[in-house]
Length: 142
Image (cartoon, rainbow, N blue to C red; front, side):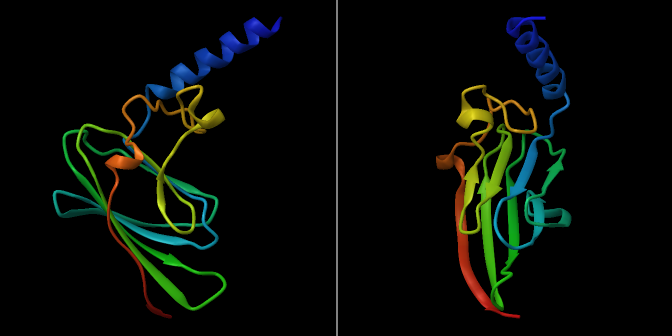
């Protein structure tokens, strides 16, 4: 088997995994854990903790705006950070928290392959300009 065959088999595997992709994926690349709430049309859909270096998925309808509220826990201080962001309808929301900001995921090889590291297509993903950051500030000490 040569390199062309290996690449083709890898792309087939990626294509299969793309078909079952969720609309929302949050990857926590920050140093502290996150408590995240997801809202559709102002209605709470769920709440979950995301440890550092982990991610969560959510199957959400494409035709609704999404709002997330995060409480970020700092491992090195007593600070809590509150982050609120909104995302447009008809876009996938593959984002990451880097410890300071919410960023659109670039994916494998910084977007060259057009997929996230989980294999989700970036074709309809939010851009950095699509992310409406409403709040990002330290709110109090634990």
